[in-house]
Image (tube, rainbow, N blue to C red):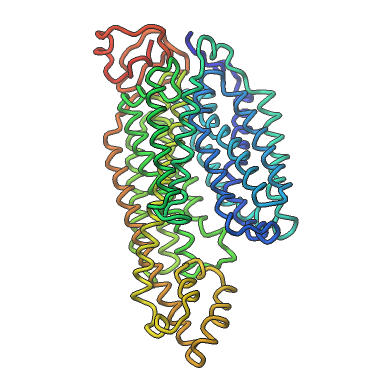
Length: 569
């Protein structure tokens, strides 16, 4: 059964209503990842459980990332409308329960529920845009969708801070309800269903279970490694070992599956394989850079910690601009390769500017590097998404789009974990070499251990306690001098350590830039309508059914070398 695009006959007003509601749902999910951070100090003060701090974010990330590829495939088979609506409902239920939490364990569990809903939203949002518009028109609207992320990252901390200060941290979660309900109502009313999409196709449930059991421990291991536990600890090693075993089982299951969750034949498409590799590598570079940018800007360059929500604004605003510009250019020219190449070149330059900073650099230099990085990332995101969507049949758009998101998330998780280990090692070496000798010789062990945490530089109250309660009783008259020398050495150590991270991220982004030259340019299709005959389309997989009931003859495969066997029928 060939999958049919259900949105071909929608008028402009209905398309814009759907687009607005999808953007609202995506905005809620994206903002939730930034708004909660602002409220966490107040949450910990009320619920206690400081040691569980990271799990509030980890549980969301695990549930969201794990669900994305599975739900993307389910959307292709059973239709995206129901999964998107269910995703909003699950997200809102998780929001209500999170706001009602009485313990940190409850909050962690309910954040996982939110993450599951958020993953369902992410898995379907960009695919629905693909339903609304063919690839030739999709760029400008995909650019708007990408801009939602930047807007959410700017607004989230500001709204979170205001709500926490003037209402209650619980309203950080409750604020999702009216906006989510509006998006739910509009989408339920105007979003058409995929009438024939599920006929004759069944999800590979065993494959979905195996994939989830492979992804979750993999991400958990990388989240733990170098922070909560050492890389060689039993917790980390066992997580990776279990993930490897389940990955092997997943591979065996998928080879025999009639409707695999992740069709490995996709990777025989040069366009899909190269774009996914670029997304993975640049995801590692992007997240590795962006995670440590606020730490450098506040801890080294002296941005006010009270304005921490504004630190990322140059990067996010320029990312929005880049996404919108690249979307318009791709839609007008029909070319995506050189926008990807140019965007990644600009992003590499932005990271290089950041890697060249020192403790004496100005805030202007830091903000310039962030703005250049953001513009380059925004410019490359939309063309890469369009390239993978354009390279597969319409019936596989959901799984390919979700795999693009999945590759970026997994790359970012792995990159941040590895970079965190580099940072810890280099920071310890720099502190050991830079701390005043008198401090290293006479300071008690707890004080020396506390000085190894660079985040102390972001907390004026903590610094005052270290000066008055740590240095004062031990060093007496020399306390102020030694304290100031210690802080200066910590800033130098932090600057050197983070710029090493930026340099590694620069190399990774440059690798993505080189890979982009191997991205084949295929004409953007002007329709979502499926075709029956499989024929070569300049490197893109023919727009045909994703599932062939019978194997195609070898001669046909030879004629369509770029098209993965079993995809076109």
